[in-house]
Length: 358
Image 1 (tube, helix red, strand yellow):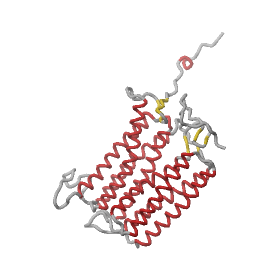
Image 2 (tube, rainbow, N blue to C red):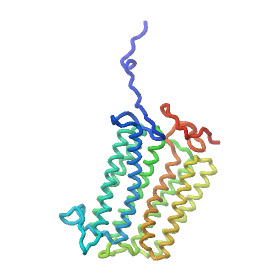
Image 3 (spheres, rainbow, N blue to C red):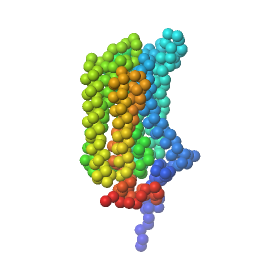
């Protein structure tokens, strides 16, 4: 006599559906009325928009400093006591609008950060808990940035406070870069390495030295002529020449390690996208070095300093790109261009080659 089927056998719990659009994937149908292509477009706009704005706020902060608009708004969160938005006056000129524009971009970042977290919670749960935590970091970081910005205003733009205010942004740029990479790479919640372990140690070293370069860069700025405000020109008590050369020495150390990593990636047959990330960081670092030496020998002109700050954002993104490209969240053997099979839930990416690494 056959045993009667249990309730679990009669009504099995279905696995969450995974929808694929190109290299993006989304779990479940948690938002009725939105097709997978529509969700892919929304995710791309939000994740890329967050990354662009994270870099953009570094540039806008540089514009505030370079135009001496740092206290264009004398209070926080209002621009002036009892006045949230700036007003044009002959005395203040456009400085309040430049400062307020930088603050407004923080608000835009907050919107992107909330949207990104919601997308992760609704559509990307299959990518694992780490993706959820990582998606929350831009929102937390943006809130911290706003609080530190308030302290900067209360401290009358003291360079000891302005420097930490800047250093939060490259960290958020790096996190945002990893998030952009993750929305295109795989359905699995488990990470696996696609390069030898030594490559990861080199990438971590690049991250540590890269952050030291950014810290020294803020010290160079803190001793230089661009205080951010004509009324409070207080600078850090360091010799500008000594700090500048320490900054340059750190860059040279970084370049040597980066070249070594790139050679190792080629010799070990690392996937093409990992090698491409290394070359991208080489280009960004070389351009930063050219701009850095040019601004040093030309007396720190505002335009070059502005480009150097843009480069700082791209530099942070490049380091994160190199580090995350040495992993994947896919199934199948690793080939020259990554996993030989990108098949998940019956989906195969036709752009992925079948060549297996030697």
